[in-house]
Length: 193
Image 1 (cartoon, helix red, strand yellow):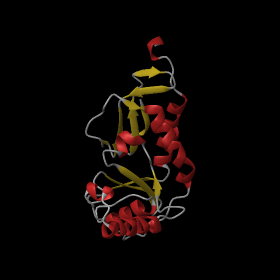
Image 2 (cartoon, one colour):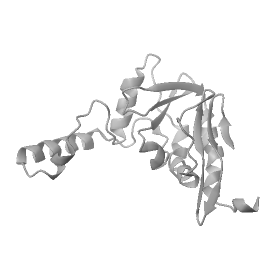
Image 3 (tube, helix red, strand yellow):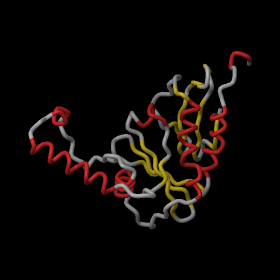
């Protein structure tokens, strides 16, 4: 099934199985006629993706406007930071530091946590299209803006080192999200089909 228009922006999915209050199936995203995710796994929890998208739906009509000469990487990094995420420019601390008792290491980690907290804003910059941990855990983040009467989607799966920038007609992303939200009301008995 398609939610949206694949030559612009669409979600591709199919309900392959439903159990209790969840439905599962393959899921992918079309951007300008091409599938974004490298593999369309069959085990995405579709109604959870829809519930995540529901949280951003009301904000899709109030997008931050980007200037004509915006830098996609700088905009994406700002969106990551104001939403509370790390970016490629943030330091990476060895995991064993978090269990260290050395006061200097603890002070450094506390300082970085303070810096992260100070970057968060309410509302954050850009509207995040949050899509379940199976997608975000692989590094994908999606932020939507407006620019010159178009929807401008910025996405990355490497903390913003590489940012994909896609322009769509205004309202295109909201339309696709709205169509996909019908999945929220599933599952239905797919074996009855």
